[in-house]
Length: 111
Image (cartoon, rainbow, N blue to C red):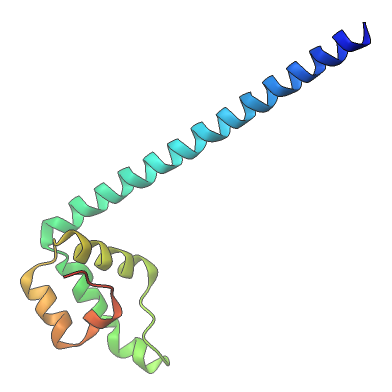
């Protein structure tokens, strides 16, 4: 009788553990899907102007950032410019401006 009760408890515990793990897996997949959707939405918005708005924003901040003691690009701007460079959607004029000001060096470029 004890062995049967112990077996039932073990099976129930294993089932519960599996159910919890499956729920966590579903949450991770949903979070990953939301990140992918957000990235594609950002790409679509960046493609509209060839990332020119982000480049202009970075250029307008350059003097202020350098005076503050270094060139730390705000995360959201840096993330979007990296995305533009990686996807090849940055306009020729935006890229030329970044190369002229040497800001392109702040971002990993895969040519």
